[in-house]
Figure 1 (cartoon, rainbow, N blue to C red):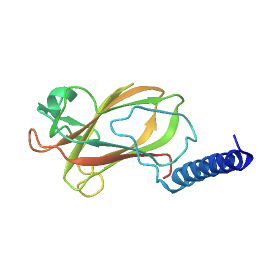
Figure 2: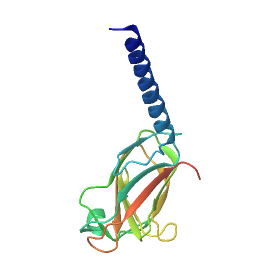
Figure 3: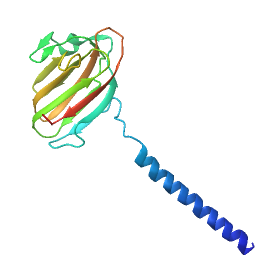
Figure 4: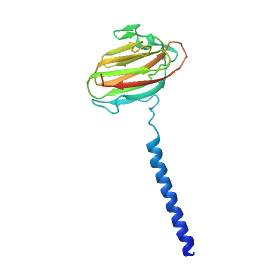
Length: 164
């Protein structure tokens, strides 16, 4: 094989490798990190990023009061419709003196949380967005995000934060 053809082949290979490395580097830097959908979460004290965000679709065919096994809790009414299974599982590894959950959606949504110490519901914490704040014990929490109309599903983000 002539030396000239070999040199062109080596240069072409190096150019391809350089372009691939540059593309991968820029793609990783330019792509915004989108929150996972219906993700399970595990956090402890001083978790990062804060707020931690996951996404989902609210709603279902089961009445919220059936999942909560009550119509009202200290944090609000158990209303709306949810799926049989929770949208998220939140594992808290250490006692947190303050934690806030906030659902943000373009539609009116509801929130049910079951975990160590009981069941909590909320409807309108921040405008039409449900949420909860307080002291949280270590353990696994099941989280449902509901819609007011049976079988209607709406996109939402769930923010989890230690910031007051």
